[in-house]
Image (cartoon, rainbow, N blue to C red; front, top):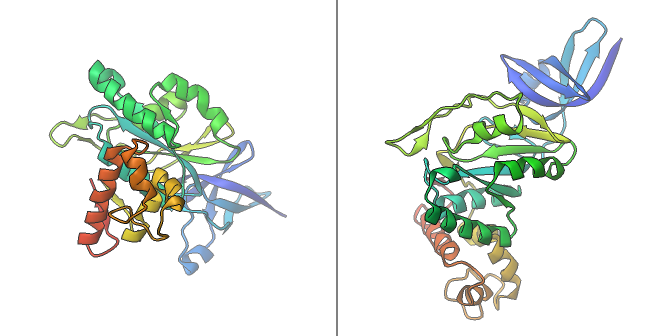
Length: 298
């Protein structure tokens, strides 16, 4: 007698798949049909599991995915918790904007958390908080206190939703996860002072229960793959540009020197930050010089 149930993959280990089925986690093996199809189940996949009375559990089907993000990849990501550090590695607007463009392209909303704020000067921290206030105003929830974040997350994470930590290596993702979910016990390591970036301490990805959903830790990114963004699509992934764009005189306005550009008008009025527009121009130039979609590097 067999029993077919639906669950979510929360961990991969040496060919085994741990699947959350209600309140329990069962260890399964994948049927050979996946190899024949060239399919590989991932953490975050909604799957069908066949259980029998002898305790032999098999993963027999994978539901269609909404997305596949990261290295190692997480499936069906519903939101990103982006960890940026004030120092070590140092905060920069340009690098934050690269992350936001990448995830906007993926169609996944982002919540921003600032780590290591206690390690920078009061003046520098005030500058960063001013930036974050702007990002908050254009639709990105921002947190600078991990206590406040911990209180807010259970209400933000919807039932069965998969949130994924992201950010540079050394920004403090695993440290934050250990604070948010004490059962995680993720390894942490100091950053490389010579390279201003951290060493990868997360070598695999697992989902940890948080609120009614899950939170995943992933390795940091040293480069963000923007394939297949085209230069004419780039403005769509700056959210305040996309909001102003319907008021542009020309439908295909690229917000450069076109007359009647609502984005340029908002920029001149101070409603769009100058640094955001400058970063837009920089990314346009990178994509154009490379002749199309290419890696967006640190």
